[in-house]
Image (cartoon, rainbow, N blue to C red):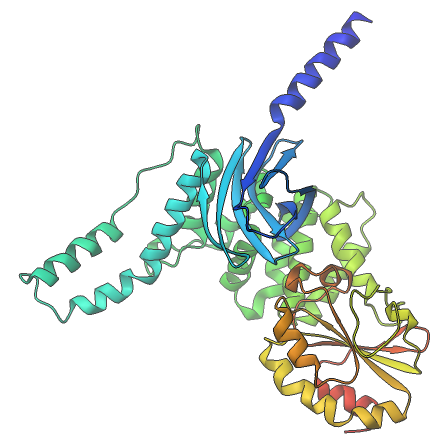
Length: 430
């Protein structure tokens, strides 16, 4: 019995040690009340907890050991801020103007250091090439020429190495970003597929939380060439083993990448592989399988409870009664939507005469922009005004706008048109 007490005490002490706090301060005139804390798994944001504002401060307690990228989302004002955790307390102060984050002050050591390094990297990537070109027009012995040389030398200089023992995540991120993703023209520094495979295979858990996984996978596919995508993926998955958590997370990311780039042949191949796995599935792959299953041909389109619908008294998607429905995910800032939706509008009366209803679910964040645009759309419109943080992004596996679905009277998916022309052709009103 005594051993049990000792073990419990050890576990409690470990849990206390692993926990850290994220504290965010905001000015009194910032109208936001709720904030949501996220960690990262590959390219997916994972909700940790939600907190309400107290004394102009949000205090989040992260119960688990975590090193990697984090973010806080303020849903009422559509503000997002990113930062890192090295499993230590995070302390941030916001400068806000008209309910928009104007500046972020990182008060803890790790985020202050990461912020300075990111700022330096951006200047090096964006400003250095311009200064190098300008230098050609000024002689070195002029005052301006000397100042240019000094600034170019400063930006070209190597920053002090990060002590990995004090800042393990920053060291991990910088080392691997510079090796695999930094835009370098030096052929000697170009990494081959085998190096990338070894990195993906041998890296610790910070790979999933670093935001590096997806861009490294894209770099890996590009290094193999368009003609070798299938063999490149098979080679990678054979090394990682899809029965392992790392293999399943990579498989999930690859399925999403092929979805984004409309590489349907490869998406369907590896989605089928994922469906046929007989082992235990990790959360990351399970999420990808579920969102894809929701929008398969013949599947029941999941119901959606409207937030503030226009042009209807319906409370949910299923409450909209019609022989067929066209669901379109769009945004007022989407250039393709700007060209496609007017064509849908032209044929709206023809569709309505056939008892076909259109339901637009917007990815907007700006209420004024959204309401101005829908004033011209007579169909059912709704929006969470959360952009890509909207709940329906994951539910309906949305990767781009506009995205269309055609449902029958029972809300079964009967078509997934690529463009508005395909929608009109389906209903013979083109």
